[in-house]
Image (cartoon, rainbow, N blue to C red; front, side, top):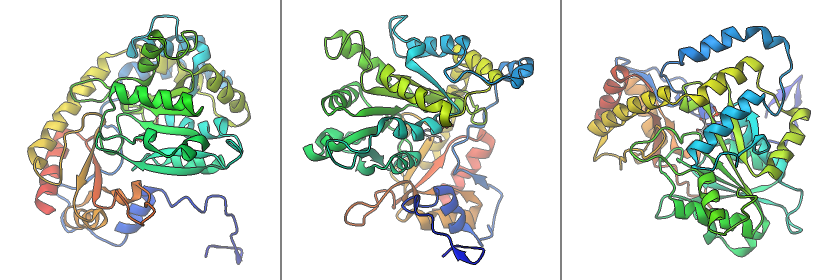
Length: 409
Ligand SMILES: Cc1ncc(COP(=O)(O)O)c(C=O)c1O
């Protein structure tokens, strides 16, 4: 038990949240000294290593005098125009469909994925404790969103098509659902959802009146085919007469950020876009507890959303990393080349054991898959046989590490 001034700490709010995966990994590896670090690499953290675009640092410097101002919560008109423009182009929307009323600036998408729960989950749904649907394995803030909003979470593993099929859940669960997360491309598996699946999820959200939150932060890192955006599918449905033409994004919001797309994880700049009713609810909450994006960051972000050259270059470099992974890991550990994102999800028997071994033998850090998933009712954890590792480092560091992984495991 933790003690403070000799007394037990009795906060219970977060007792159902396990320590974050990186903390668990550090505990797992604590006290082990690697025997060989010649190919040592931290492949556990999804932090892009490609260069920060020069124009971003130039703008941050140029706009530095405005750090003395409180920035607008809903974004500057320049930020709104750039993000609306990008969302429009990326989702094949008619210009003018996305306006400022459809957007919320976020300090990275994580805080939005967390706070959306507080904005859209009522204390009761149809007289019962509300539910949140989450993929399993999943990006951990989804669990925080549910817990802090007083909801329970139903974790749903991917079906044969690689995505969680929420439509197959029993009626009584769907009737209690207030919020459902989809991660597309999926982290950690690197799968991409098809148009039909997304359409089915949108229709389900409307039928049972829950918020569908699509986490698309890996959308610009893909192998061959760009992932279809959730707002693209909403718009197509509305043009086919499904859903309102005036409100094509009803019940749906998407999250994206510059962290992965533009190698700007430290800038903390993202957005939520979609249903104006949900947007206005989040904007109503944010003056009380949200953080606006500093003005220089809004200016630099606008320029980043307007530019695709640095994104295509990055995508090409990720393609080379996928090639290297394929060279060393193809045919091993159920390797599949990621369709999107930059994670590998390798089936290694026992993920924790493999993680310890890779650290001890080769100084390579990976994440045990068990930390990214929750146990099912039978106590089985779908992530347990896996490790997750990220393809973010330059090729000269990555290649020896991949070769070492293939030899060591
Ligand atoms: C699936 C997924 N969603 C969202 C995020 C949040 O990224 P950020 O807050 O930097 O936008 C991450 C970060 O690793 C992620 O892996």
